[in-house]
Length: 110
Length: 113
Image 1 (cartoon, one colour):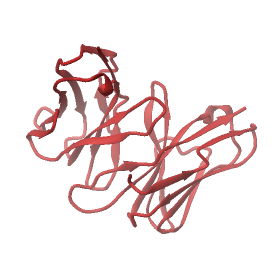
Image 2: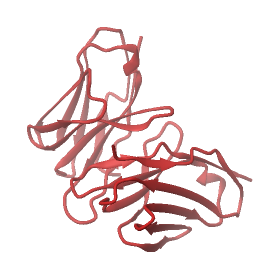
Image 3: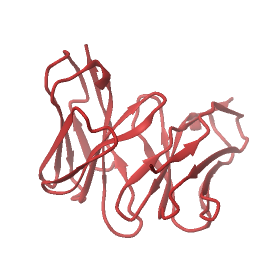
């Protein structure tokens, strides 16, 4: 069983603060790591992908990967009310199999 | 826009009736997937396909069948719908190669009454 674990939240942060979302995975041979944002009633939307250890920045988003600790995180800087959504962590392997966490609900309070 | 179209987007059906959901892609991706998403369970894989006529089961395949006769189309059939199959169904696609990423369609909301 390939497991991806996330805190379900809800996580609340004030507008302008940094939101920190965390994810752990069980399969040590996982190759690719993703964060998706899902608004209520909508489909998951890819916001970040990361494949090697370290940080990857894209605008206000930073993904961090530590394969030794089997840990992936997402930082959202200068959080906006429009960032309020559920964030899904996903892990992929070389066989194009993908495993998803149950998501963390984020609310940004104006 | 990942070039994925699901139909129907919303459907209400009666218990015991067969239902088919269609997924159509314009990206020529090799892999196609059907997931269902339910509160507290996240996204769960029903079936996936790795090529025309090549399919395999996911973790929640009971009561579902799939077919892929063309690269661009992947059909999910509920053979005899039950209330436990009320859910939102997402089709997804991915391709081979480094940096493979999975992209989702807009979802099909199914209610079985």
